[in-house]
Amino acid sequence: MSRTTAAQDLGPGTRPDLWSGAVAWTGRDQRWQPWRLFPDEERFAYTEGLSEQARVAAGVRLAAVIRGGVLELEVEAVGNNSAPVDVLADGKLIARHPVAGRSKVRVELPDHQAEVEVWLPQQGRTIVTAVRAVGSEQVARRPPGERRWVAYGSSITQCVESDGPSETWPALVARELGWDLTCLGFGGNCQLDPVVPRTIARLDVDVVSLCLGINIYGAGTFNARSLPGQLAELVRRVREAHPAAGIVVGSPVICPRRETTPNEVGLTLRAIRELVHTVGLDFRARGDDRVHVLDGLSLLGEHDADLLHDGLHPGPDGYRLMAARTVRYLRETGLAAPTLV
Image (cartoon, rainbow, N blue to C red; front, side):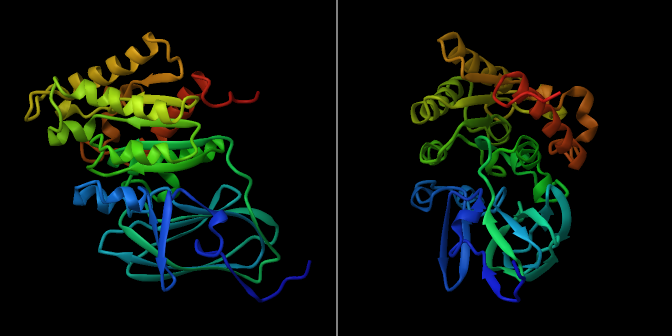
């Protein structure tokens, strides 16, 4: 097949089949906004913080099989806080470009047929205005991932502190396992909002992970009386929507200054962690063996506290360790295929 200089439009409006990680897109005048909550659900959030986080492109990516040519990407960062764009070919990072205001990214692609991924920034709001493959011999959809995974959590699932959007712990896990990720990591806003399970219910899902507790501690959202029922209702609603899915009920990773310090409603982080475990184990005791309980301390525990760059959020090395330990956990539970020897 001969190479041409023609540009092929790979934007979400023209080739939505090449894009993953957004539950929906809205567009006008070639300005495409990715959403991580459905827009018709977002209006019922009743909190500006969650509404803003729903527009952050954490985990949103283009994934295509492309032979040669140049990839051109034009995006606009809204606001002052943004992460870079990562471009990968066959799983290897070939470009990392900072994004500020209106930005253009131009990357030479390998001459051979390669699996190309473009990960949008996991921090700040990003508008996609143009994506083109110029002079490429082939552009095709990449085969779907082995399993469809939704990861719900806080800023520790959004991973602003990672080196780039392809190196958040959910991205690293998905890349290692070949899973199709939808990241619902909402910084400061993992508060068991009803719009989240309603969104999850509308997705095609094989595995749902729920990393619960750290924002509930910080905001004093629920007390010892109200929290268990709210946790259980989230799991119930996910199970009702996805009867065969694996559900991982996860508790917070280590945060030394919060472990034994009561918050404004009298809960320590240690107490919240125990309540999360109790609720998850109750589902298993009642016969749902597709619910699994993940102790956050097994991902980052007391001896890993030096990997928290601010005493709360892991730095890049911490996220890499979380990813490696999560992969091991998913394989041990049978949610992911074992390593081939």
